[in-house]
View 1 (cartoon, rainbow over the protein chains, first blue to last red):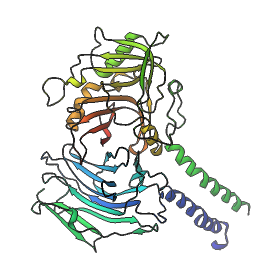
View 2 (view 1 turned 90 degrees about the vertical axis):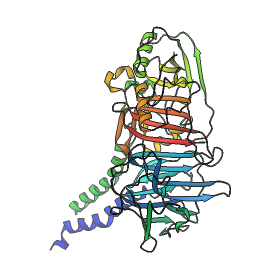
View 3 (view 1 turned 45 degrees about the vertical axis):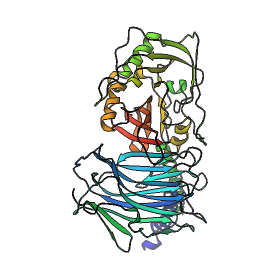
View 4 (view 1 turned 90 degrees about the horizontal axis):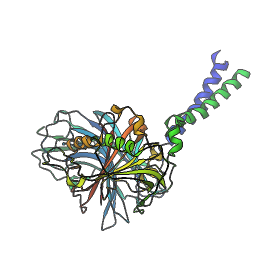
Length: 227
Length: 270
């Protein structure tokens, strides 16, 4: 009988001991935040993008991102990651942007490998001990903050941002950028689905741009009405 | 029972060796030691980074017995700039200290300091040449011929002293000096024509710059599948790119010295 054989015992051993241990190792590499009694130190999103033939109009850039935000009343602080589309480059790239505290209060903006079309996961995570924010792209860390970033956000933020009306986003009405699976870690360290804030941070010409919030405020589309 | 024990030991061995092997594969520079590495130490992981660290650059001219001659030094730097060697240009031999050179300890290092004057650096969409870049100072390791730095006066500071040394180990990245003279000529795209290409791709990041600092080295970046590949790190400063309450922006570009491709860029607004 198979269940009495040595092979059966071996399979049980592998399943029960080895695989969880390996899984724990690989998962553990990306769990830098426990979130225990801490404010928001992690935010992520899932982006589905589409290709487009860039029609350059000389604008700067557009982007969608997930991030963490806070303010000291005088200055805003944030760590964000997502994709950016710069019309003067004719390509889209992932970006990581953060704000340093004293003494420089600088803004650092990093861009890297083209995002490409398809589905991607972007995440920013803060190491609670060092204050260093790290950006992840499809599970791989690609940039870490330097300087004084030892602040924690009080809210997660998810934005589609178009700096100029003449800037193109990828896709069109038929192929809208989908931005979903927003989550952040709450003060107890649990992954939480946040509401998408209403259009308070979304000032646009509705003749040119459209946004649609769906699925109990857990996802939205954004698209160019005149691609 | 023996068989079970064998497989259990095998499984435990795999459990230990797979993570070890994974780390080994993606750790910087693995065990690739060369003679050049001995001359120019690899960066050591740095546990802290302090913003606004003092910039220390000194050059003490002194006679030294070095393998790289003055003419060789001028030949190398001229080729890397992409210009014909000038009939004459100021060149000093001495001991250089410069804590802005990323990932390389330049402390009392025998070096040639070569000053190019009246350079005509023309950029796309620009009439004439760029006066801010008419004087470039090249620092070359006098023992290995490795380029350490090219800069204007004053230099641009895209990364502060110690910042890359702190950042790179976290991402298993590294940047080490290379002996440019040892590379095939076609292996490194020269700097000055490349500045024009940067401006074409990143408008107003070179043309409006007031300062420039450039490094050349072997770049390793697992995220982009780059391993020991010659790269320029180009930093431009004093850009007119207002951002929020900030008025000054510095930019950094990693440029593949073989293909001219970008592999990442950074804007710092103060």
